[in-house]
Length: 416
Image (cartoon, rainbow, N blue to C red):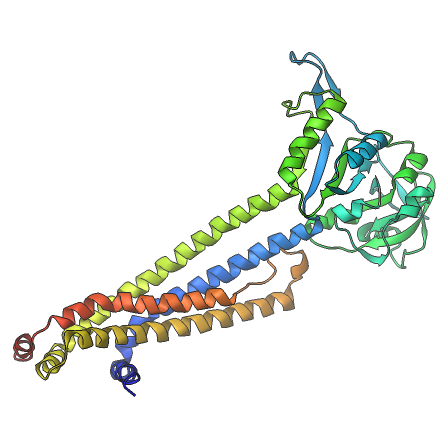
């Protein structure tokens, strides 16, 4: 019972001065509410960004050929291109490569038709490994496979937008389309996916061998993509592949225009560092608002101490120790802070849930950078710990002042 007496005493004091307690706690409630909103929306935005990265496999690398100088005087240049032999040798040379595929582009304007319906898609020739690097999922049908490439099959994986243009009133799966004079059978339709994969809606994928055979293009190309095994070091591999290609293609590895390497791991790490900074900033803003509320409570507690000077003097006159006076004031401060903070926390969580409900009801969050706000359990626990320490901090100096009051001062204060 001794444990609960200080709590009951603090609550009774709060109830006796409701208006004062509400005004004192509003700043803390508002501060914790804003902190929850900032952290929830910040984590939601972070989740949305990294969800977009799901369109690419982890440890994936894009390599593009550029223009290389033939000598140190840069008097002439040559284009860096790759071929089937290069891909085969690279795959055999580097054991850490899990999947690898060229990315062949149709040069010029490609025309796809179905009777009177026509479209101007981007045509790409790829190996089946391509879809293990760039994560593309079929909404209907299937992806390209090894036999499609080995047997030079005239099959195509088309984007949903192209499918709707060529077959506006019917299902295109299994139907034939004419691409620059060659007929291809549609074996799959790409799902819409995330924001990063929207360009795939205007693409038609065909097997690499079929691409070369039908369009007489792609024997040399300037891009290939790959993904590394789980435990491979992407940065080390990037340096090694650049040295290898420099020797094979005859360019100086210090020539920044020779090849361009996009390391997915580096992009993810850059965003992770960015969000660490953003989260730190959001915590700073929220805690500053919370601090303003704590200062407000501290000022109110000073007023409380002044108003209860006579009471505190009487307590000390009948034997109350300074320590008990200090804890009396701190307990009241903690009670006001905790109750106000809990209200702010509860309202913040309710607001986050209402926001998520509205997003799910009125917006297509799949293609959005902001999917939904997130409040994790550690954040709530940490916020409650902050509230308790805030109450101690807010009541400490008023409590020290109260403990220094003597019975004589209390009598003088009452006689004024």
